Image 1 (spheres, helix red, strand yellow):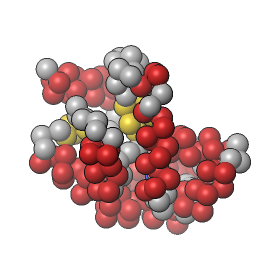
Image 2 (cartoon, protein in one colour):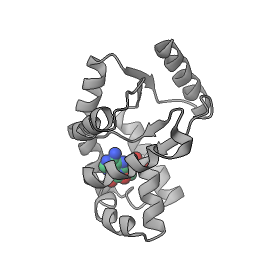
Image 3 (cartoon, helix red, strand yellow):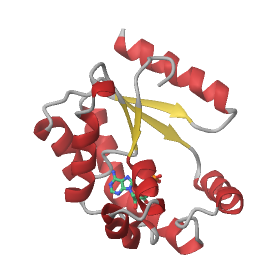
Length: 167
Ligand code: AMP
């Protein structure tokens, strides 16, 4: 986001902020996020639609953690009339993901970093999010970057891969 001068819009961050501030939305989504299940599409799509309509999103944006299933993909490409330039998939083996989440559970105390919620999230990713990647692969939009290593080096790889893709 810093490199391209556009905002990052993270649905997970938006949900966590609402939970923290005990908003109506926060109360509605907690039962899903805390267990590691996806929040219903109607709620998720609405917050993305509102956020993309804000001024700072006029010249582009990075969506982090959205779309996470095929229905959201349809919403963003067709419903919103937006065309994505590229989709970045960061890959890491499951054991690395488990280690990172265990570390994050200690450091941040995220409500959904319990063993049960982690398992649900990994299952949900396989079942619901992987088909999204397949579709973007077929459409020639997918950029896959190795997500294991130092953050700076991975960031550089992402920018390099995106620049190559966007031309
Ligand atoms: P994240 O920080 O992206 O891992 O998101 C944390 C949690 O927020 C997820 O486990 C879901 O419960 C919810 N969430 C985030 N993004 C989405 C999305 N696009 N669709 C449905 N639920 C989402």
